[in-house]
Length: 78
Image (cartoon, rainbow, N blue to C red; front, side, top):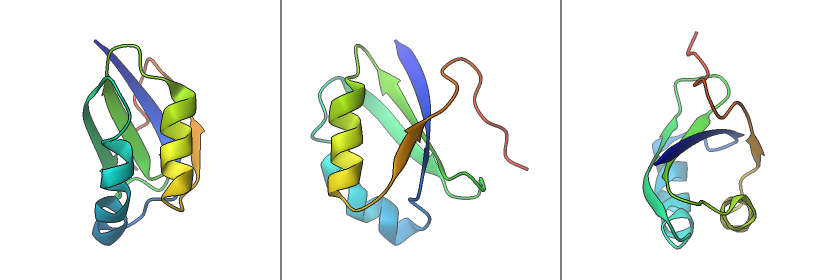
């Protein structure tokens, strides 16, 4: 199981709901969540062999930006 972190522009509960259908279509994702309290709006994704390009396409198709950040240490909320 791997966990990856991404900076996004997903910034409210309504945004999370809007993007959920897109992210849930990406294969191999077991769990995901967005920390909207974090200034970087961190999307944390857990699964096996997650395809970055499919995840990126899903988030962009939902109307939000996404950028990969550290894959080993989760960004801290200030």
